[in-house]
Image (cartoon, rainbow, N blue to C red; front, side):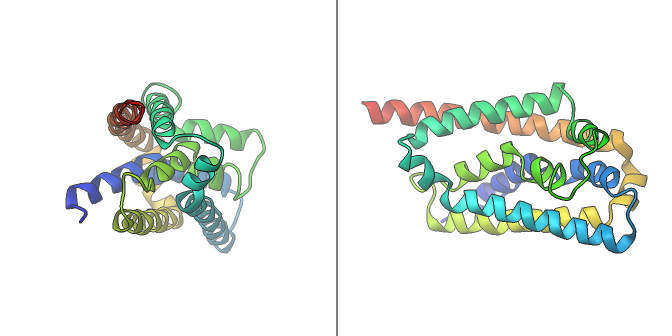
Length: 207
């Protein structure tokens, strides 16, 4: 049976790595020359593509790892390290809005890149869903709840993109950056926990 605290933990991890609030300024920059109908289409298309990518890794990511001979404990440790570095970059480096708006300035203005990838389905999000779907640590109920929470956050992300202009007027780029950095701090602590659990599991297997 999965506890309420575990559900909240899954939600926070997925929210931090997908970062729907950080997607708002990216979406605005990408769609500034489009009308309302085109903006709605781009929001839907990018959300759908990101959902396919993340659900794919949620369902078969661990299977792929096992078939290439990577122990899940090693992946959990390395994934935790990468998530930690991802979080550190969120805190101290360029924030999501700053980084991905720069990609738009370089001329890549499509729904797929940088909006679906890497803004929504980021490397950190892909790593997170694989770890959250680990069969040795999490039962079927946990995995199903992870799936529905992932879809819920992607739906919220889509709604925020549709309402991006109004939200951006309220919080601005600075507000989105602050939220991104706070989520980075939370993600760093969760990533550190994954590293410690992965190391513990690895040595338990060796013994």
